[in-house]
Length: 338
Image (cartoon, rainbow, N blue to C red):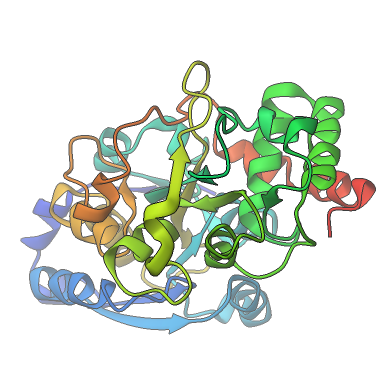
């Protein structure tokens, strides 16, 4: 299959007359934030291309696309975390594209090596801790498995794709045996059996159920931005660590999107991807959900900015998260990380 070529930039595409395009693009998305509505409206206003959104959980959308087969109306598949978009790749549901704009705006480690998807925003998975109970919090992901933190850690279940990608990155950096030892160490250090979402891990610090938690940054930023039950009232007592600042940097999760293999409107699909990766859209797309843009130099939101500057992991290929996902799950099962 030949990749779709971006013969026109977004700017040039906007100049096309209406009959040149189908004037619609069908977006299958597991991203469900109201903050995106205005951005999609801006895309339609500038291009004349209407976005038809089908929202659902990642697995549901993938199964739907598989069932629809060659008759699928899906043009763009958008999901949270590389682990999820990699499943679409493994099922043969995405096709390659070529875009000078995306290659220029999105770093290579935030794109699929064969251009089957591109990252559009980022959230980092970092370490939070109780300021009054933890004098020396772990400074790396590896240190979370240190026995001195036994009985202190709250973290989500192994079925959570964020944890799958984190372990997959450790496999990529240290190998399977070291990753297995790390996962076993985390299990030994858990304050409780895994339960709930990332916000629940942060609530565990506030309630005193745990002293250390692993969470994506945007959940904490939500607590800073508004009244999150069980979190905001005690958020001043929570500190954070940007892990691995002396080596590879903090692990980053991506919102990623690609063009469906049977897309009826591939040019419009590429126009949407380019728009979302453009300087015009990046700030709004990321800041609307307290995330980080993939385009360097774009201002970040007020509450995210409170977390300070940090070194992201720009050396571990994000595509490896999907490639190592099966190994990660096998390790989780072996060490009893439920």
